Image 1: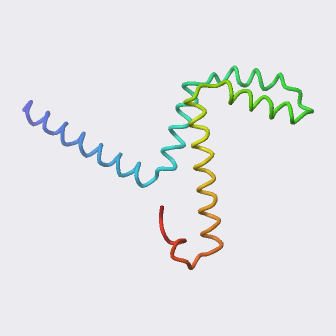
Image 2: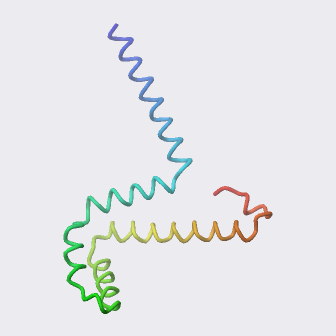
Image 3: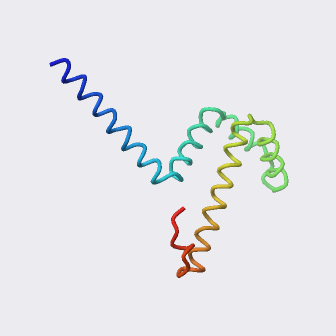
Length: 113
C-alpha cells in the first residue's frame, strides 16, 4: 500500500511539473510580470516609498522625476535589472502589437514569438 502511494505521488509530481512548465512557456509575459511583482514586493519597502513620495511637492513634476530617478539609482541592482527587463518587455510587446495591427496580412504578423 505504501509503495502505491509513493508511486502515485511521484507520478502526480511529474504531471504537475509538466503542466506548470507548459503554462509558463505558453504565457511567458504573465510569468515575468508575476515574477517582477513578487520580487519587487520582497526587496522594496513599499511603505517607505509611499511615505517618501507623499513628501514631494505636488506642484512640480520635475521633483517627481528626480525622486523616481534617485529611487532607481539607489536601489539594488536586482531591482534595476528587473525594471529594465520589464520596460524592454513592454516595449517589445507594444511594437509587436502595433506591427500586427498595421500589417495584418504579412507573414511576420502571423508569427507567434
